[in-house]
Image 1 (spheres, rainbow, N blue to C red):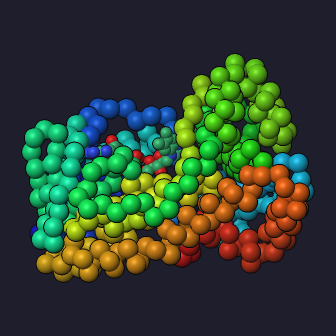
Image 2: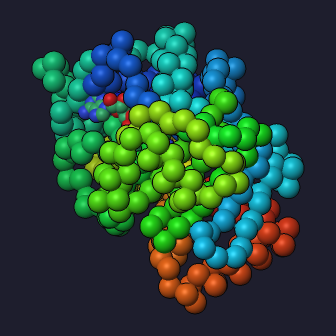
Image 3: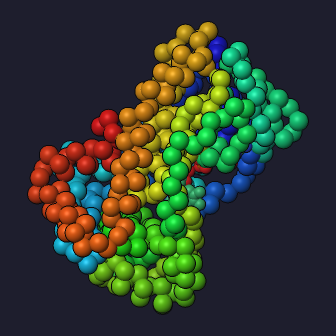
Length: 381
Ligand SMILES: Cc1cc2nc3c(=O)[nH]c(=O)nc-3n(C[C@H](O)[C@H](O)[C@H](O)COP(=O)(O)OP(=O)(O)OC[C@H]3O[C@@H](n4cnc5c(N)ncnc54)[C@H](O)[C@@H]3O)c2cc1C
């Protein structure tokens, strides 16, 4: 049986290991965090397409705490134009699902254990050397591991890979995301909001009986917003977001994280391929990045299954993988970057054009269908 080594048991690395096993390929995973480590409190928005991947891996049924999104309301502050997408428009049960990162990682950990996939927790890979014949991982416990294919799913932590190319595209949006959970006066009824403002997009995602908030702002504004006390924060959020959900009545502690675009691409070196956030880190607007990462994992495993064992990790296979992912990944990078740059300004003609764009989206079913399908299945939907 062929073997592949995976760096990182985050959602993307874990999904890849499970999908490889379904293809008859043995995966061994090295994960820097100890097995008992608790994941942080971030929230993930899974598309319907990602849900189908998790279902095929038997992970979906293990997930609790999942909230479906059946409608998305898109608007811009201070100008006309509203668009509404609904699951019925595209004939799917939900446009997406919201769940805690911790819920997903716990279920994936359990699935890896039940599938008897070898995961070494608490072992960080420090360097990867590779040539045309094989790749070797060097770990911080002093051991080395060699395989015909190494899959880097380290979330883009900057692992040193011999002959790694420079990122192909980088953009610092000079924005940060303020994230927390908020309670609104009115129940969410499974509706998500994406609201574009000149300072950056803000999203409310239904999560349990609350909303997960992602509020993007300049560095200085984000620090100021995160430092507000609850009453001040709730009032500021109401001014920023408007009253569609009534008042904001409670909020959990706020956290901030920086937002950037880094498109590195899947090619790392001979016998080494990057997937998930290790290959591309996107702005969270429209929730593309994480779902692209799951598709990376799924498509790579499928290709490995279609490759004769002697060619696993070969240049021909890795080139075919990069070619196959190009449209989906660059489509997601371009779509996200377009939304952030076109919607994060207050230039009057652009504002009016955006309003017309939202109106067209609202009134034109084929356009609505196109946008909804790209959010669900990616650029090849
Ligand atoms: C602070 C923060 C907040 C975020 N919030 C949101 C959000 O609200 N909504 C959203 O949709 N997305 C969010 N994201 C993005 C989302 O978390 C990623 O898209 C998703 O986690 C990518 O999955 P991944 O498996 O590629 O990487 P990760 O989830 O980062 O997993 C990488 C794994 O690799 C391990 N690892 C790293 N280096 C090594 C090494 N050298 N050796 C061995 N193991 C290693 C790590 O311990 C980790 O388990 C956030 C990201 C960050 C950084």
